Amino acid sequence: MKKIYKELSKKYLKKIENKEWNAISEKTSKKHIEKMLKELPNLNMSIDKSSRFLGFIQGVLCAYGIIDVDQERNETRKLFQKYYKENQITQETIDI
Image 1 (cartoon, rainbow, N blue to C red):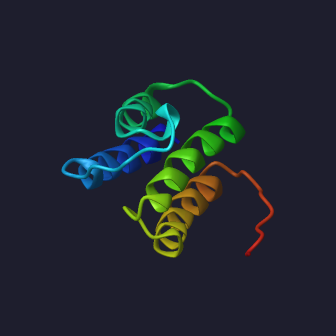
Image 2 (cartoon, rainbow, N blue to C red):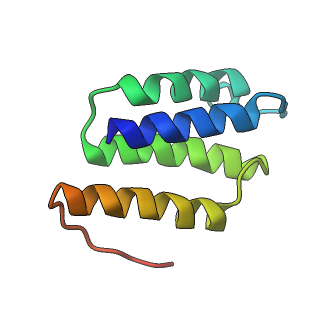
């Protein structure tokens, strides 16, 4: 799982490298998101918590128009489904 988080963190850090946005709070600031992205691959969290952590980052990046929610869902879904299959983890899928 850390490999996926490392890959996504690198990708998102590159996307925000030359971006600026007017954050509505400290938690949605570029500085805070960069910190979260740098920490994500190194944290020891449950799959549930790390998914929420990543989801928050993606939500902020979507809100500020840096990533597209549909495109990211389709790209990251493949990464996670491969990981779940390789590690024999079952999960329900819900498409909304």
